[in-house]
Length: 363
Image 1 (tube, rainbow, N blue to C red):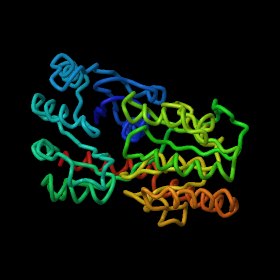
Image 2 (cartoon, rainbow, N blue to C red):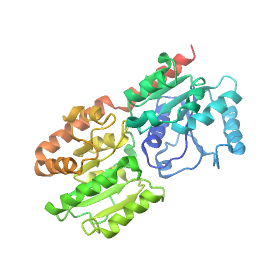
Image 3 (cartoon, rainbow, N blue to C red):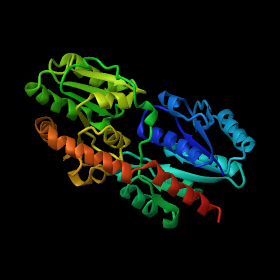
Image 4 (cartoon, rainbow, N blue to C red):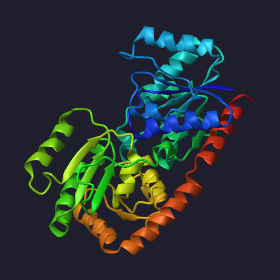
């Protein structure tokens, strides 16, 4: 079986991590697994296993025919049978299917604004849905959306839980500012508005009033846009944040950073099933998270971490204080989360489900 995983880039974000995880997992099961970043590479290239051929198509735009034909040539040369297209890569996957008789397309929908699906443009997705041989979705809302809105037949849609598997990060020492300060909070999320870092910063200012030595690390890619500049401005101009909060950007030593911290926080307005939570669990890091998307599913309704409402800095503060003021309880929950991630969100189960879908498409 020859499979090409297709993703826009390899920045250190959730969908991109899953693309790498799946390509590596397929190779470990004996699949002839290939990986293509259509637009650009990124920090996650470091974690692509040696047995997974990887290339960047260097796409300059949606209508970049040179890059498109380059992927088509690669497909023909390597006798690719299945394209596993993540997120927006679906469009090129469908075009490649039209150009390549016998090619099958699996779409993996990671759409992170699952709380605002009614605002998601669906015209082109409906058209592309007719060409999908199967669709994986990362939560129940996307499952319903694929069937009821995109009109993909229900037998062609499957829920597939995200899983964390970047184990090669383990064992290194984190290079972070003020690493001897305590307590240390980390937020593993790209700097996008849906992640609501403003809510987290408002909460952190209250934490500093009680814990002056506290530090907050924002780990994730940014896009040098207005939102990023807004956050930079807050960190520079607000006394309680200045020299206490650090934007670390996209990092390859995520596991080491998590191991150095005391609390993992997500303050999102909307989520699917965030890989960040799974990585917090793998690191056995106590968690405080807004109850959006499938965060409650991962944290088992609060049994494995603190769940708080979104857009509520006061509730976020209380969740953080709950972890810091009751460390034994927090560590017990962190241990439960680690066990839950290992049992319910494992690579082995996910890859077997993917392979079963691939095999079924050939019948």
